[in-house]
Amino acid sequence: MAKNTRSAATPPKKAENSAAPAPVGSAAAFQFDDYAPAQIAQRIEAVGVKKVAMALTPMFALSVLAGAFIALGAMFFIVVMTQNGLGYGPARLLGGVVFSLGLILVLVGGAELFTGNSLIVMGWANGKVTSRALLRNWTVVYVGNFVGALGMAVLAAMAGYADMASGAVGALAVSIARAKVELPFVEAFVRGILCNILVCLAVWLCFSAHSVSSKILAIVFPISAFVALGFEHSIANMFFVPFGVLAALHAHLDLATLGLGLGGFVHNLAAVTLGNIVGGGGFVALAYYVIYLRPPGKDKKPQTTR
Image 1: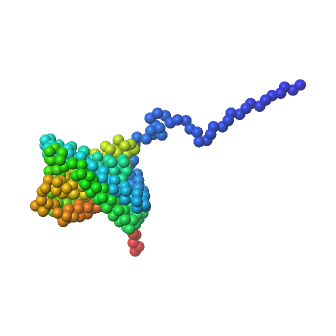
Image 2: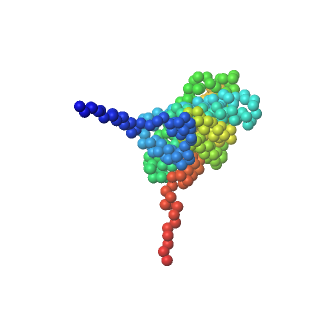
Image 3: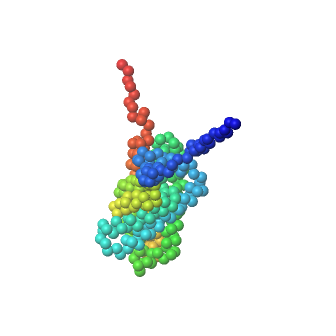
């Protein structure tokens, strides 16, 4: 009788998409490397395209938040600088560090800031954002930022913020507001350029990071530098000047004598806003567009035939 043999069972095939775990410390297991500058340019351009396509209501709401966030950083700055005996340089450095709170809240918490949105110029230069969409975004965000910053100035005044340190906080706020409105147009314009170069570089560096802690570290140094160096930020001034006016009124000071009229505020805001656009849109966004996003064919000279 023939012996009954059974064929050996074939082992089941492993799923094609299954893979062994990546070795500890390998690039597949962990991602510690920052994004390269060329990748940052692509990411910022893509985000800019999404920003201009945002619906009006969330765009405006996020803009109001950004204005409020920057105002909180400005309030922090005034308190820290009040009766500060560290000396000029160290005091301004500390003031810059605490003012960084504003941009940290904007970039980590999520909000729409006019000065940072200067980087949308990269997408505009590359033909992915229309002029109309760019201007729509800038207009809505600028107005929303103003509403948020002005609202915080009113809330700070109602909270008695100017009375802190026996009124020294309010006195410093008035002094800051006066210094801003007294700036000549050209000086305010150039300070606005230099400011937004650093602000947009802070945003640029954030796009290189993978973690919240890395983003915060990327923000602090550029923002501390612009504050310590006395450059001008249009959205911050939307808080500094109105709150200085409210602090002056609270102290029963004459606004005309102080030079804190509406004309001086508009004069400063116009100069600084234009400077911020040139600094962020021109010196940062267009520069990086030419370096990383401009099609190579545009650099070729047309060949001439003899």
